[in-house]
Length: 203
Image (cartoon, rainbow, N blue to C red; front, side, top):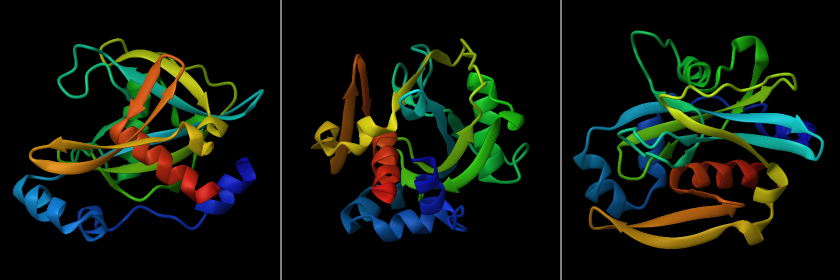
């Protein structure tokens, strides 16, 4: 599995213009009805892979319920691009992963990128940074931001039977929304869309 992932993403790189890339890919009614009417912001998330006894896992966080945005939801470690701290979106993802789950740079290797995605209703254009995390890394949750850290086998997401799809109305716009339910965890929206895009490249 790891070799296939490396091969699939070895030539990927962060977009030079993630906003334009997303706009060129989305339907016209979303671009004109939503994206052109809000201030878009750039963010990065770390899609962390770690080997387990069953294969390869993805690492997720359950966001703290006291957070302003997406409280209590399942996500990847990540946050806004900060011009005062970050020279690239890679640094954003690494910085946020360190702050949220204690992941040091020595414990991860960047192996590729998923195309930028739009975060539903928040105006964030998000670049997913794929990282291989060492087997000896033990995550530690930042309790101010993270309620729980957990793993899900990649094989679960590759199985199309586990992918759900529906349409939802936000800001009077019809959005296509994907989701997965793994045990007690409901993974939806941007996080599910990133997983879907990631899996489509390795199947």
